[in-house]
Amino acid sequence: MTEDVHSALTRDIRDAILVGEFVPGQRLVETDLGDRFGASRASARLALLNLANEGLVERLPNRGARVRAITVEQAVEIVEARLALEALVARKAAERRSEEDAAELRVLREGIERAIAGGDLAEYSRLNQEMDRVLLAASGHELAADLLERLWAQSARHQFRLAYQPGRAQVSGPQHVAIIDAVLAGDGPAAEAATRLHLESVLDALRAS
Image (tube, rainbow, N blue to C red; front, side, top):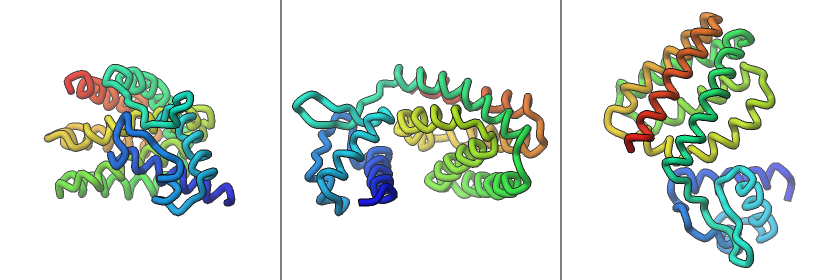
């Protein structure tokens, strides 16, 4: 298998974990994964190692691997760390974003507002993730990118559940739009402040869950 196929297998297992096809505490058997995704046992083993490094999977001595269960308290700590990093990324994105980045953000802004108006929470969640990726690329901050990729993976299940809470999109949607608007305006401090406001509201929602 090539490295690209290994990456694809890691992504497929990751996505299955994030959407709840594999639940916290569930054992992940290499042979079963290979059968399901059409991969070799060695490839499944490598994918599980990758996911263990991301914090989504934990490997147990002589017992294989299982989906890591992340408590609300741990999720809060992860978002607290994300707050500092994402605020930095938003400020850098506002300072460094290209016209191509700006064009992508405008499309995302329209999509987010349309998804909220139409009650399409699945699309809204997808667009939020895409917005994070665009801002990260626009920021050009490689260290933050490496750290945030891991933190996003670890907190994704809690984020996914929050996105489907009644009324949550009506709160977070305008916050995402405010972040985009500040970045488009090239206003670093405003982008940083809007990001902090958004993630503080995520923390409040997590603590109340």
